[in-house]
Length: 111
Image 1 (cartoon, rainbow, N blue to C red):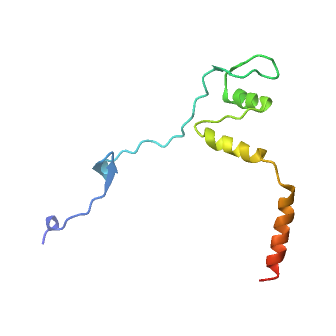
Image 2 (cartoon, rainbow, N blue to C red; image 1 turned 90 degrees about the horizontal axis):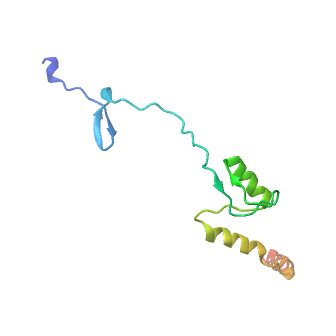
Image 3 (spheres, one colour; image 1 turned 90 degrees about the vertical axis):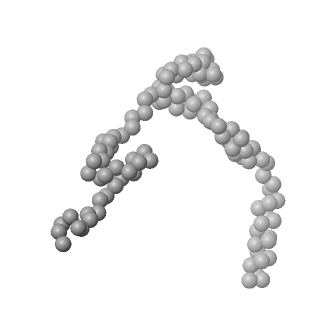
């Protein structure tokens, strides 16, 4: 038996829906993605520090502006944020804590 009789295994790599022999595959260099800064925009609310709606030029200015004015940034999850605020604003029942203590004590003796 000659060497041509034996088959060699080859490795393939899937690239974009096709199979490429591993020895022909050229991987793209691994790099970090650097996100550019935001484009300047005119704020919708008046800044408490200046009394006018400022032009925000960077992410750091945006964060400082929100913090300084007590604003909350929300995206597409408007309902989730509103629900969180509603839960925080619900009045607490002063009798609830005492009732929970009574129920816990009652069941403690039965176990």
